[in-house]
Length: 151
Image (cartoon, rainbow, N blue to C red; front, side):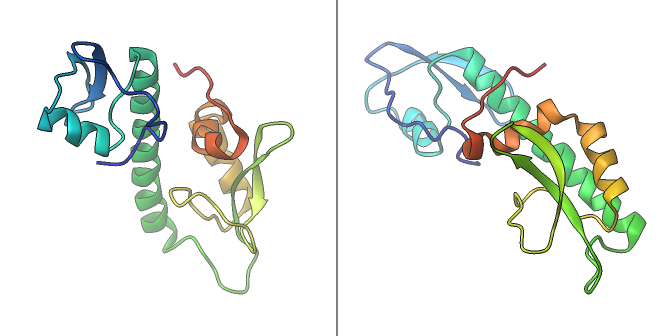
């Protein structure tokens, strides 16, 4: 499983409740039991959350990444591939100062690994409109220290 909770500073006490995301994407509440291999597996994978809101946020982020991967597969099939050597290509970036999602040149830009590269600025703008800037901002939260509301 994807390590989704990078803040491993919180550790539940004996009998204290925590939340995890199960194999079908549901958030589950359970209690910590010392020595539980079940808990250890969750904790090692970054899948232990102190509250349901944080776990729900991570579920939404994982859903977004899955939707983008499906989009990329369809986009590549429709265009014969997204990156054209020797041409101007585009991807999605964020202005850190304003926390604004925007189209940026793909050349010399380190993109998030799950964001597509486009052959036209218009295609990139359409992507932002389709997935919304608010949802896309979740992908840049480590860069800008952002964790907003989803829904």
